[in-house]
Amino acid sequence: MTASEPIPGPTTLPRRRLLGAAGAGSAVLLTACGGQDEAGTAQPVAPSTPVDAGAVEDIPVGSAVKVDQEGVQAVVGRPDRDTVSAFSPVCPHQGCMVAPREKLYVCPCHSSQFDLATGDVLAGPAEAGLTPYPVMVQDGRIILG
Ligand code: FES
Image (cartoon, rainbow, N blue to C red; front, top):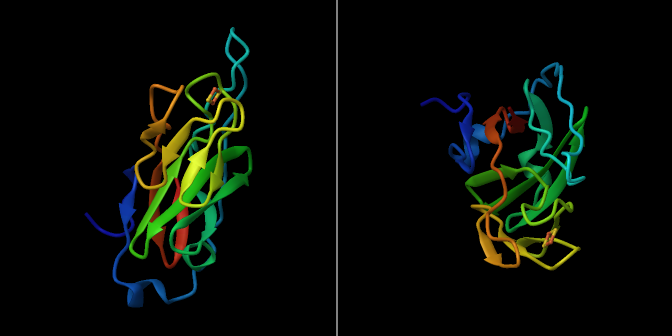
């Protein structure tokens, strides 16, 4: 696998020196739509085409950010220096949007907590983890999809 092939869930970055070059800023087109299901809960808006989610260096190690680019919403984390992970921000409990907090994701509705690296449930009431998005790093840029 090369550094430019998308893989689902967390991805390990190539050596830092390979990330140092500034990204070329690839053009990104997106055709994603989200919404609500019949129960009125939010549905994940997965990227259907590559989405530039920003520079790796803009996410401090051990933290995460929310991304809202061209209709795709995600939470993107950097659990350690060499790993980037991306998930749907939609809580699997009842569809609220989780937010990064310290070294995890927290749902504001009923306080479920999710692991920054894996999206796994750390504390309920959610019984399932966050839905992973394919993510890769290309020229220091985080690419979803
Ligand atoms: S909707 Fe997230 S914990 Fe209930």
